[in-house]
Image 1 (cartoon, rainbow, N blue to C red):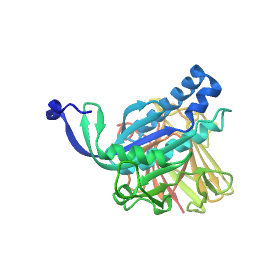
Image 2: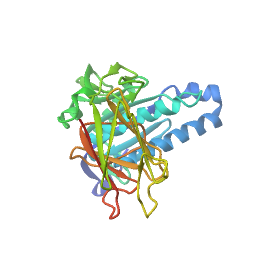
Image 3: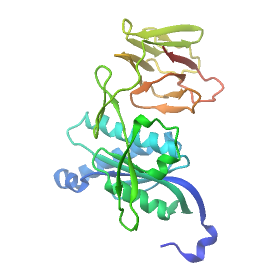
Image 4: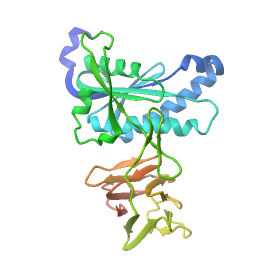
Length: 306
């Protein structure tokens, strides 16, 4: 409960609150034992926290097997939630013990007291996460309405739900998260398949030279080592020897970062974000390689799908 004597230190502001909850954690502890299960979950949450920061969010706190975080912009929460599920899917593909995730988020005014958040927005976000099943991302109609330009192909109406503690049902939407498979199909654990836009080739320009990725030439590697297709000149050595690769998969162009310092993508005229998992390039944009965006020595590649 909030101490009424400290209300002069409280602030109210619009925020998107997101809860990421590990599914069936009790069963995980029962099967693995307390120490092994805790180490597995702690490692998983550590990586989720990095994703939150990468998307300009704030980790509020850990509540048992649930991560609570906040974002100043709803769009950032959409992107972070999708990357969280992608991360879980990638990690689960590398180990026997599976850590399943469900995510819910909601936007509205919150009360900030120190580093913590309170209010109806927090409560609704928590309830939305509780409704989601394993591998699913749910958000509210109110949040979707705040980002009307968001790709409609990545959100679909789900159902109206009377959440605990509320007197009126809330319109819930499902956010689709996808991962590249062989060819040009993308998997979503909830819905089956989503077909991304396709193109004949990707044209990229970097440091005065142009490169093409297409079906006859389906792989383009980038880095400082001479064995790469694109040898990046970088005196500061921010670019890794084998930094990244772009693959053509049936007309879909997938960027995979393999570097230490990262690759940043800006689609169209949008903001830069760091890519940590295989990412589908669309339309046109910029890649900032090795250096953070706006660094005076940044190395920028321009790309366009044709």
